[in-house]
Length: 250
Image: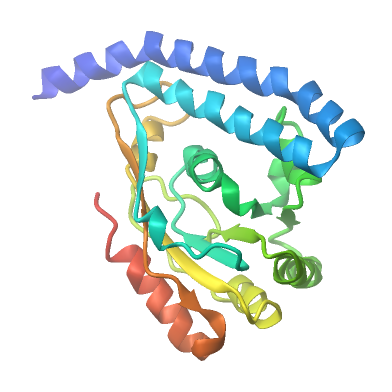
């Protein structure tokens, strides 16, 4: 068994180079494409460019014999403001949700560090309607989250929040923070909270950023949506957290 694991890791080196080459090529290619779409053709064109980018970048997983799937997508209500709440295991959490849930116009609550230096990804976070949070400055976060809540409430769009705050490196969920979700619920009272469990995404980065883990099927599981106005926040938060973490498989 140990020999098999060692061979698997050895094989992952050349496959990881291929996967990274594919990924980097497309995020660099779509940086100017996004700029043109956003500045010349507007929101819808920019969103379509991001959808296509998500398609190509998620294909990089095939180089490491991995795939991504989603279940229970049919549970998600359409034409409503949505707050997707998920555990966080790695980069492909964001790309996978962006691809599979593209019709819901996803925006992200993301750490401010991702807002610069990453081709395409930083551009989309800065210009696609997402919120960049400085985790060391709560005063900056509160009005930004309030503005996001009012935006999804008014436009019937969606936001994704990872209440662990940072990705787990072993699949074990970290404690969920309630503050960000509480603000989103307060100012988007007609929204639905949609819990999503992500499994196996952490295994892609089990060795760090290089090499990538191979042969890991990433799975997104959508749980029953809950209308914000039908629950007090503490009950809603507890039910959301439990739905997510009880479905995590390591």
